[in-house]
Image (cartoon, rainbow, N blue to C red; front, top):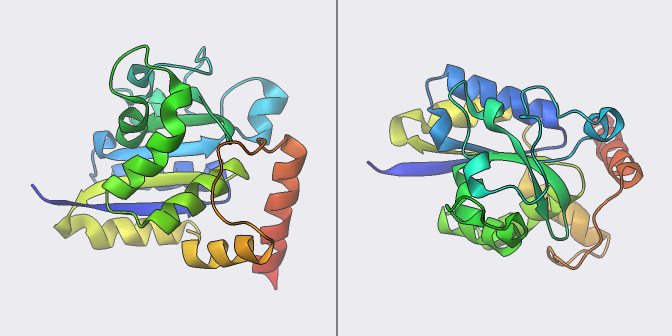
Length: 206
């Protein structure tokens, strides 16, 4: 069966999570959906995962912990630590591919693997770098492998929840001196993330 990878970038966990729910409601199997999201301000403040995330997951969780649960993708979310990004909540096929589908694999290996997994799935390299940088800055990424008959449905769902144009976001980053994602970069603090989100919220309001 031939599938197409459809990708949606969002400025918040909530938008990404609702996208995942709607994809599943459209009968796209959770095994074909993946999400990687920056640990939100709410997670940092409360010490509990965003709604739907599994508890007790440690940074450095195995790939097996990020494969998704029987109740849907969000039930299988776990914590990973990605160099240059910091802690993320993640689950799904893309994450498993990035860290290696062996229980106990080091999650820190996900950085190059995340970009490599995206490009292997057909995402342009320049967009893959933007996606990784956006997650570093507080964003969330949803990917879905869908049959041709469901591509238009998946695209519409992702657009419905405020999907970011990666070309426009790349231009905004480059206008401020960014070149490409660098795993040696310092992860954003909650304060950095808040400023970043406020910046793009203000731009959308113009």
